[in-house]
Amino acid sequence: MQIKPILAALRRHKAGTVLIALQIALTLAIVCNALFIIQQRLAHMSEPTGIDEANLLVISNQWAGHRSPQEVDAQIQADLAALRQLPSVRDASPSDGYPLTGGGWDNYVMLTPEQIEKTTDASVYMGDEHMLDTLGVKLIAGRNFNASEVMQMTSRQVVIPPVVIVTKALADHLFPDGSALGKPIYSMSSTPSTIIGIIERLQRQDVKTWSKPYAYESLLWPMREDTDGLYYIVRAKPGQLAAAMRAVPQALYAQNRMRIIDPKDGGNYAQIRERIYDSDRGMAILMGIISAVLLAITAAGIVGLTSFWVGQRRKQIGVRRALGARRGDILNYFLTENFLISVGGVMVGTVLAVGINLWMMARFEMARLSLAYVIDGVIILLLLGQLATLAPALRASRVSPVEATRST
Image (tube, rainbow, N blue to C red; front, side):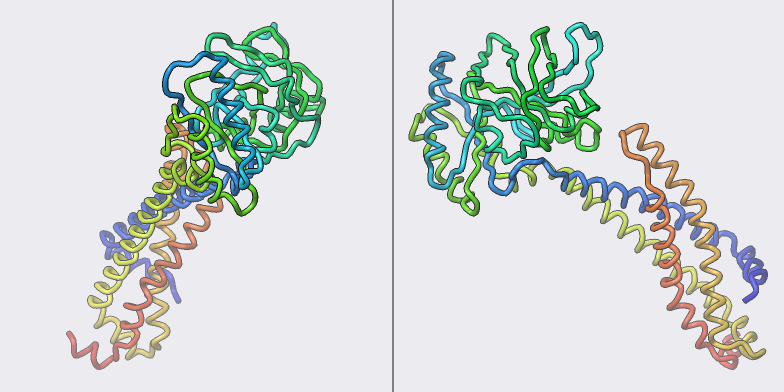
């Protein structure tokens, strides 16, 4: 197949050629970035928290009426004792927050009290000596809290605990040489907190940090709060989560009915993930629909233009057939013609795809577009162009010399 005659024919149809090439370019640029966004969102949704999600239940508990700190702490301990006695419950712990969302707060961390600039930020979880077992996190070094180390934190005074447990990610950030265990760290004051344990993984409470290097930099404080509300994190025995979800609220109301359990905050982790990642799921679906629509429109445009050109060239096709051209030659002509247009389009589209990604990186903190997505997009558009051209090209190859001649 000679390329020069095809290029000469395309120059005589500049408007249609340019429009289809630009359509392919725009589709490639959008589809590449859309697929990249879909992959990012799906990765976000599947990011592990480090806890036993399959058996965890979170209860958002608000107190009704005024109570003293001592009364609140006594009620919390009574609630926990009742929850831990339930047949479907393995363990329970109070907390100010839980992974992915819900309460909690971040705190700066320093290696010396004289530091002016913080070393890093860490997500702070408060809990008692049952917190590790309740979450199902893996202790890889050191020890757990003991009951005597658990403190009461009032809303009127910030207390820095003398001991803390940190995640491996935080330990490695603070002490890259692996010597974190037993070392002091500082936050909010000059009072040191000694690292007594290191857990494998615990995601931060802010789900927006998932792609950041500090997404798993968390620490645990041995504390119970006396605030107006808190979370009860409950770990059900294997296979008994549904039973625990029924029994836990009943047990809490039996202890004291002067409380409000918010069903819209907490729940099991299937519900929590569905609620937290609703926007990511919606974005992935939207990007998928946009990509499918663009590909369909591009394919329809190629089919329409090729069909139009076939109708215009019936006499030319007939002449070529009369001179000995085979049906395969006609088919190859149109496929090659579309391939050349598609190549021009994907070359421009590659530049547009990178440009759009750079713009999104600057405006929306997107990650850099991987070259693999551009290559995949190029392959998809080239194949789409060939498939869209195939049907009208086959019709052209079936035109007989006599029929083409009589059609003039």
